Image 1 (cartoon, one colour):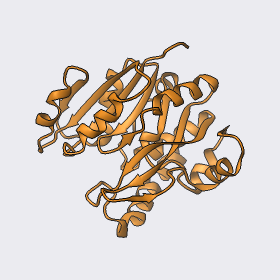
Image 2 (cartoon, one colour):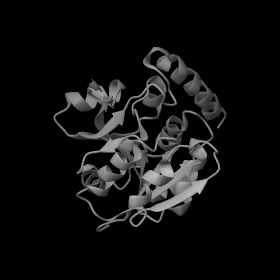
Image 3 (spheres, helix red, strand yellow):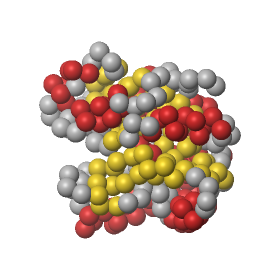
Image 4 (cartoon, one colour):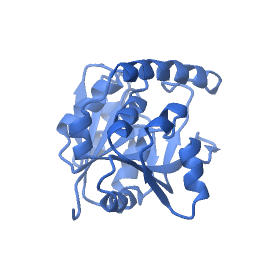
Length: 243
């Protein structure tokens, strides 16, 4: 596939103060064949004002507050791309993110998901040097190769491998087969499990994502994050077991 279209889906809810920087990180991509879909999930902050300078180059829709799954699914319904790239409204991409992942996806057409590495940061410093975790990440970092492809369904049960959706690139055929996001707090983890059950996944070591930590995020402050995550993951695993 030559020069595929990438649909960048950004869901936002009261994160207007971060949204311009996030949009600039997409506009600065060296890969140019993209569309940006921003779904405002009923924000009550100044998102509408802050996004005005970008309206000529994005698709911006507003809806009543229905939660993150509802916003992402609304974006998926509008996406025309050959690939879908998810990006939360407070996270950032390095300029070569899409270019590198499109090339890797082209070399691995059987993969249902491409995921890169990155760092976590707050406004002052880097708080974590990696966004890939677990045995799969260890194997990748210990290897001389820059990427690894395989069936990792069981690995996802042992430990979350991907920290944030901004790391991923999804082929359209995956979205058409897997369907919409489930209405879970850990909906991205649920999506990875559903993907890994049916498709191989490609991980690569390029550090291309900046995942922003702030205490008012959905996961909350550092002191309670692990507790919140584990509760969310248990609900997803119960649903996955029934499926």
